[in-house]
Image (cartoon, rainbow, N blue to C red):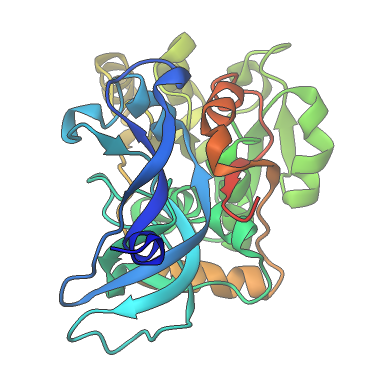
Length: 325
């Protein structure tokens, strides 16, 4: 078999053979996947990085659902290379983005991915692949929390914890689009930016406890969870009948007890693939209503460095692997 034939059947990918620190991420060449019926093969131009990636790499998060060796990553933006039998909605050459398969492995840290065609949506026209790759998991999480779970309506007060992060900065904008009054918690250097995105109030949680600064909210989007008791403390600022959506750690016993005492509703949330929501998100992006922040990009070979930066929990918006670098 010639070298050209080999290159046609293989791809660059970042794999892990054991769970552990960032150094377990290694780049090499592996067999390229082939699309099954109803699937598409997408050439990945960029792959978004999310906290679930480094948590899974470390043996937490979705690690229990994965099999080693593993290609991490769920956020992709790229171009359809091939379509499997039965695919009617996409064609080779289409620019698409998606969060395929979650929480099953999607293998986004690679040059190609395969997944059901209807888990992909057309990439926002106004975004580069790098920007589009930063959207799917974070934007879908915010959308499914605010639109599908909380059903936020105009005039409601929405508190977003960790508002400067990947999910948080998109949740601020989507809540504002829905007509809500938005309160955002973040460190003070992020406040001016969050107000540009639509936050009506900002709280520096390092200087003042949020429950001393606000109250009577209808919905809390909790992106911190049980750390420092943020989930249970959120009940104290939520009106009777309001809702706390606890995303990273689900509904803890402390949250459930506090909510029961105040007649506040609670809900966990685990994001799901949703092409229809991605299409709606793309329309918001192209209309100028929603924008995504990419703090830094890395080449595929520097995925470990990207994880090290992400684990500091000090990034503004998202980190992205740019396969063109």
